Image 1 (cartoon, rainbow, N blue to C red):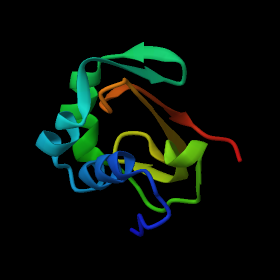
Image 2: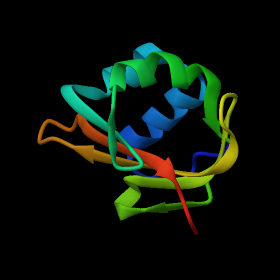
Image 3: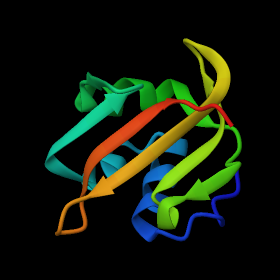
Length: 107
């Protein structure tokens, strides 16, 4: 999958780590107190980072917004099937991801 549309280097690293199920690299990009919201609902980031990352991935990146912080695309989950999804990354002042919003996208 082509990640060249992603201009934010940390987001690009995160998506590439997610795509390759590299839990160690993925986790290293997050702040200790980072939170995850799934369709607006709090979800356990550690569980997501060790389970979902192994069974889910973007099939394509359809658009990138918010200066490269928001990714939209076709998504596959072994558990939930195929759908459009978004990942919206937010950063603390140290440049670590401190909030990740994920969910089904409508575009």
